[in-house]
Structure formats: C-alpha cells, structure tokens
Image (cartoon, rainbow, N blue to C red):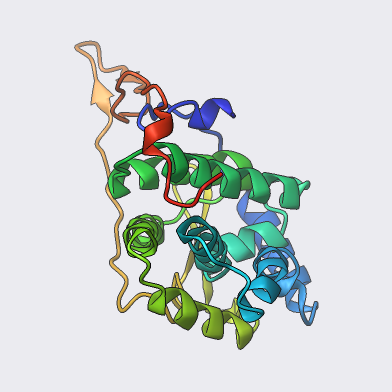
Length: 247
C-alpha cells in the first residue's frame, strides 16, 4: 500500500506544486486535437468490467460495488482531464489503477468509511500523482457518492449502479472549452471543470475554495505552515469487517 493511503484516516499526504500554467494550456490544446483521447483510460477500465455486467454474471455485492467505483471515477471530468493530459508526468494508467485499488481497499476492510476522510485522501493523491487541484467541490462530491454506493450495494440495491452503467455507455468527450485554468499569485495552475464534476450523477456542485491568511511572527517574517489535515492512529484491519461478497 502506498504511503499516501497507509491509513485512510491518517491524512498527512506530501504535497507538490500543481503543473505550471503554460504546460496546462499546451496539454489542453493537444488534447483538443485528439478526437477520443478523453475516453482512453478511465472509460477503458470501466468498460473492461461492463461486459460482465451486461452478461449478468456479476452476482455479489462486492462485485457490484467494485464496478460502481470504476463508473463513478470514469465520470469525474477533472480527473479525466488530468489523466488524459498526463498532468502528472506519464504512467497514467498505473497511477489511476493504484488510486482505484486503494479506494476499494479502504471499503473492503473497514466497517465504516467516512466521506470527509475519503475526500481528504483522494484530494491528496490526485494532487501528488496527477498535479490536479479541484476547487469545485468535486472531490467531496465523489467521496459522498462512493459511501452511498457502498451502503446501497451492501443492501443489494443496484438501481443506481444500473443507471450509472447506462450513462457511461453514452458518455460524450470532454468539452475542453468549458475547462477553466486559474493562475494564483504564486503561479500555480488550478483546473476546474465547469461542465459538471460527475456528469449526470450528482444533482448539483458546490464551489469550495478556502483561503487561509499566512502566519506572521513578531519580527514580521511569514512562517511556513504544514498541511492542517487531521491525523489519527492507523486502524488495524478486521477480517470480519470485509465488504459482503469480497474475497
């Protein structure tokens, strides 16, 4: 398991600067000239599982949930842009599959998964590995959706999964003209997709951008402050807490 996800409640992820603004604009232009690039990785992973779904060979709660996570991630516009644009410097499929595996690992071995803790870890991972900073509330939206899907799948309620499956089959390419790139005072680029963070899944998006004032000591020097993520002791995995149907 990666250091970022050693404990999904631990937080404390290392942070790195997002991709420079000039690189963002260059990659956006390059992707715009590729007719189906936005569908090559996230959708490919989801559709590898869709054949089993269509053949009605998915039986357990865990298999339904696993597929639903792939579907949810494939609808996250900001992540699709970052992965297909290689904002994180290449090897995108491996990095994406690690993200997917770690999310599934958390739900498989924990009785209760909290959306805020899940959002915190996803946010740290996509920034570190994909150079992606989301300011549209889409990370929190995704984490909340994942917890809802987990509860529904545990209770054999699959209507939402079926609806998401149909949505992915008709997924359209990302409209890069709707993507916004902002320049902060420090020159860091941040992308937000105004067309919808989770296309067709969520009902609304909440703009979330928190600005913190720098700390200044008595001599007028600005103090560097580490991430304020809450840290707790790692939890030990209990085999009895495994997701129903997981092997």
